[in-house]
Length: 216
Image 1 (cartoon, rainbow, N blue to C red):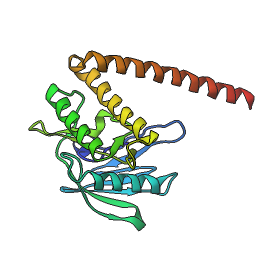
Image 2 (cartoon, rainbow, N blue to C red; image 1 turned 180 degrees about the horizontal axis):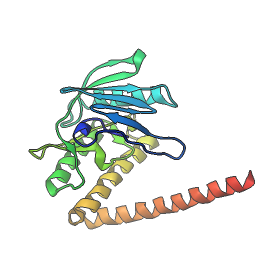
Image 3 (cartoon, rainbow, N blue to C red; image 1 turned 30 degrees about the vertical axis):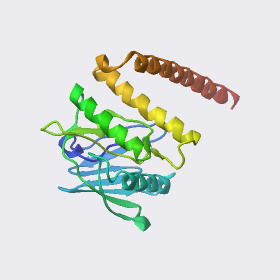
Image 4 (cartoon, rainbow, N blue to C red; image 1 turned 60 degrees about the vertical axis):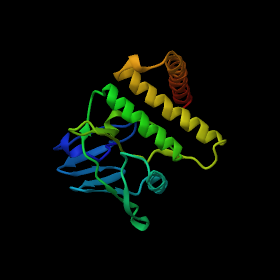
């Protein structure tokens, strides 16, 4: 999904994307981004995010709202200005910067600090695509888009333990892609092992899908 913060610097006109079943991005016009699941309006200082009625939209709205509330003391993430529960709409501070394709050592150090603070606040991300990472002209890095997160309620709960490891995996993956020399040998082993498991699960999923289709 488009992060919204800073995207106006990167994209204009119309875009069309595809998920497994339906188009994800409908169009981008100026500072307004619309998909089948949300409407994002980027102002000079405020980003307005409307969650459209769709599968799980209320849950995604509540998840991002709670994540932002928990991260009030976390540096370089959006601040929740206000929310309208009946309209499933969030009003967030706009962060400076734009999406980048390369991350420097300093960028990754800053990102590691954000992730450390984020996890301490009880928020874990399901993914960390580079498009959700913004860097401004001074090199200040920010992280946006928290609707697909897991929130910590008890540190011993399996869902939190797994979500925390998933977040750490995605951070290590970004380091490996952009500055692999920064990975410790232990981090590299953990990353390799996780990649093997993910590859196996993808193969298993394809086999299961093929089997189900053959049974129809």
